[in-house]
Length: 552
Image 1 (cartoon, rainbow, N blue to C red):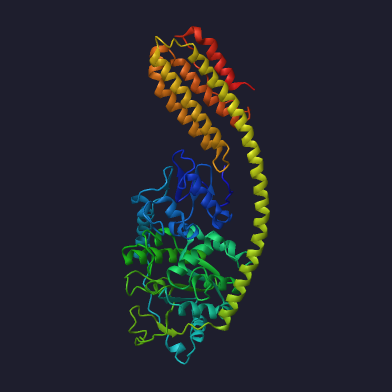
Image 2: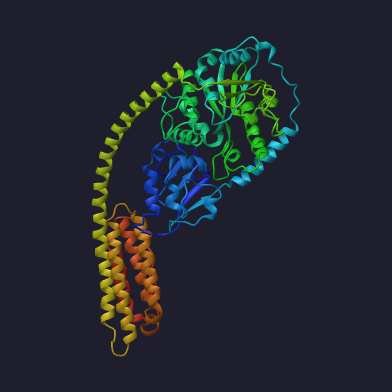
């Protein structure tokens, strides 16, 4: 049973699974330690996150960049080589710190990309050619950037804004003028860098809520993106950033629609000015431009105006040879860049991307941006106070639950100690019947087995007393150890004493005792004992073992 119930995500559709693969207990790098870290992070506690936590597995419906953003310490828990982030390369090639957990890839990115590139190639091969636009005459007397942007929307349903991702001016022109754009009929911003497959539901939830607070997984990712592009430091809120753009869109009643997918965006290990690790820029443009076209056609409504906000290489086919936003939507294109300092300013005609218009802007915070910052930070502070109150209540509930679990564990420990003690006493009685002089090797081996099982029992009871260790893990570890110890002694004891069936029944009795104490006597999933044919005289002992394991 999962820790969280996800309406739009199930265990059958994860991208990655963190799977328990062993029974290691009490290690800083064990599956349980990793699971406790994940559960402590806000993203795992947000029911909107596509994450399901179970006893022996954690299912992620998010990409590696999203996981890196939400769980920054996770790579160091799992991978041997120090690294700040997971990538498709290092989760396959690096060694593992943890001895009892592995990350499994359920839907390999490379296969997704191959499929996406094939679809994109077919789509663009049939895309009708469109006549180039001529937009300069209609705005030749306008000088303010916001006037130019708004004027283009008078005669066009869409406008494509291209940018260098580290520049703030491109965010500034949108953020400062979002209210005017809404008045012009803009309902949607189609945004690069965010994922239609894993984040669309998060955006929908955000834009249908009454709060400026974002779903945790989305906020963590946008902050991660902003830090990667040097748009903000730490987790401070910078208005002219991707996070700021999303929050301002919410304030103004304009939706964000992602035009990337996990496959179109990430396969490598480093964030750079485009997408991380996509080795061929043409492949990147092919995949993202196709996703943009498909999402635009699916989401477009009649009489709706929209802005595309993308990297400059995506606005047209000039550099990549792949049809861009202007070829797909017949949008006029603007590239917005920060004011050049020592460099000579280019013109639209000399710019590498050949946009219809090129605008240079400073990045001084406007009054609108200052209001955005103040309002967002107020909402964040109010949210912190609400969460602190929720945490106080949750902590009280957890302490109560811990006390209840400790009491339950003590009951289990008492029952386990009693039942296992009787089973081992039976073994002790059998050992007392051995002729030590004629069967010295068998006697020594049986004493060694008894002492080892007593040690295993003590460690098992100690593990049961540690509520940070799941009882099922402790049960499996104990049963595995008992199996190993009994099988190790079986050759000598079966050969010299005819204890083959007895040892089989001894192990089954231990397993039944574990089942019984774990379920407080409610389980009927017991193992049937073997009726000894070779040692008929020991049948009463076998029956006694069964009753010791299964008595109420």
